[in-house]
Length: 188
Image 1 (cartoon, helix red, strand yellow):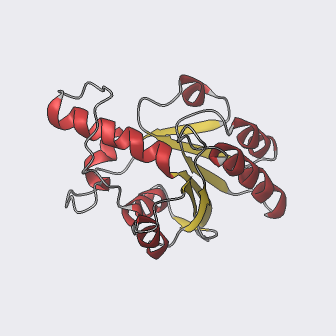
Image 2 (cartoon, rainbow, N blue to C red):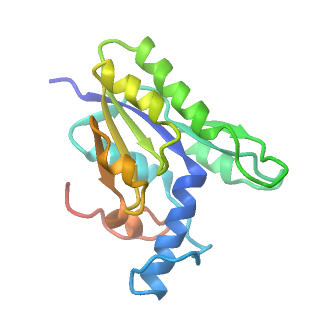
Image 3 (cartoon, rainbow, N blue to C red):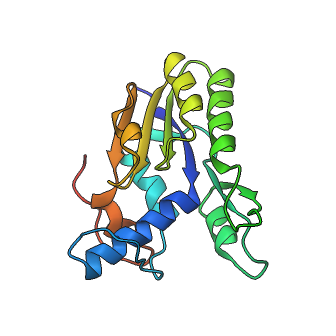
């Protein structure tokens, strides 16, 4: 049997910010989340791709897409992420230093993919808010399997939305730490 195909979309800022909060909580706060962050925590995106593919016998259907804010010119993080195999879509921050456009673009890209690829496959989205749900609902209505991967504090609506499989990433926090050297938890 051929490998199942996965289309991967990642909201970098959303995933990373909550990862740093969880990492802080695990190290300093007995697992209780708060607003404090472990700024040394970096996600190993290569491990994340491996994790997504390890859920069943799956392969990436296309280059995964990672969305985020334009970094300072001397920041190498996006070059490193490109080396991990991601297509990178960057947005400028607004005057209040807030990210604008990421969720909308992610949702539109999901909806577009479901129109272009036949037969339906699986979409994996790593994000924790509900701003992209319009695209996800269209994917589900077109027969696609949709998984949302995020930390346990994701928007409750995402965790309960019909037609979506929610994967709680909390148990993978140490494994996904760049340079962490922690073995992959047992298969899920």
